[in-house]
Image (spheres, each protein chain N blue to C red):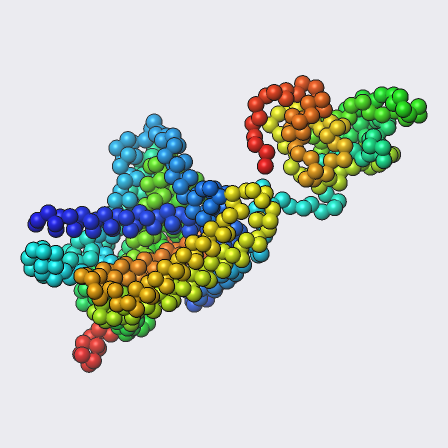
Length: 192
Length: 448
């Protein structure tokens, strides 16, 4: 026998369930009629792959590297972000810029998105406002681990809708691909 | 019995099977789409044929493909014979019960309509088997479907299946009693157990319908409520789907079934819904009869009815065309690529509904021109089609109510289920039978 948990006592009318059932049916009927007449105005969900949600301004999405007016990245390879990163996912290789006798520049700047925890410490630590997470990109996916290593050329001025997924970008620009990336491997997914 | 008569019976059997089996996919679609609209979701909308998604109807086709392609897993410990035969029973029973349901008034063919045939006036009953047991046949057969579930539960050799089967047998047997008692009320009121006679007596005014128990009012209403609740329990639908109880016993009796064997259980559930709705309509809601139009009146004024139907169809179809046209402004169509095949969908549906409106206009013109009167048996055929259409409309409404109830009410706990069955419905049903008996005596003695 089931153990009875004391709850509100039902009146005799309620024990027949008729009125309560009709009340429930009336509510669901109202929803149905409203939705038939008004297509998707009341839907609380969106047709995901076709319609994409616009994230709020402060959403921490994929990283981007900001640029100077001359098109070079602002990053001076100071390694602050790599230092503070709790997931140790940022790899920077610093180099001397022949045009600029003062500052260093990153020859390589890679973020392993599989390790990244989106804490935003790199953005906070950066003295040059060179890295931001304001792209609003939340679809960070790929079929291989290499697909998910975002590198300098890809992250430069990355904006939602402006660049394809990293996977597709690396196929178009093999020179940007992270080491070990096989651009000739068969594609596992058609982009949409 | 000559070959023509055998052919007619075969055609009727084919129609009965087709009637049930062609509504099943629509209900599977409805279960998804109607539930989605109840819950403020768009529902199935990915599968498409050349960009036409038909509101998710294409998903039913993909389901069929999926179920045929899936591996049919057979548990090694299952009892082979029981396990093999179990999925067949609910489906067979569902189709068998449909055989005694009438779907139109008798179709009369006068002698020598087609040359020498028929030799004498021929009356074709529009029902597969006109047997005098009628509703008793249905009660006998529908109680057999519990065997399918019990055998599946026992034969799977799985504890969850076993529990599901036990629950199902207890539940279905309990509710069968209340259902039988509410049907008895209809037997008393109409004085017959034959569904075709019950259907004939329900012709004309809607106050001849069973729900008004002509017209002991409250008796019929109580009988209907008890019958409907029992049908929900008999079909193992929510709020009485204890036999499946996903939250507690995986999937109940069909846990071990996959591929087309599972599909048989799945389709049988919907076949039972259709049969349950059909019986509800036949007993309580005037069967195939069009409200306020007796079959004879209908046949005499068939042209007027066609004009009315056509005139009614034009605005209804245009309304749907307008809905489709309105939907082209959805965020969805603005977001997908301009060359996406789905872009042509709103135009396609506007075209379809406009053509339906034109067809309605054609129907009205058909009535006006009295084209029907000029052709042999055309009026009879029109009456037959109208009756089947009416039955279909009523049955679809009750199928919708099935889905509607499922997505509105939470599941009963097992003790609540048994309390409701034995302590509420059975006593009320017995009292209702007494009331109906008193009412019938009063009617026969004082009002006849």
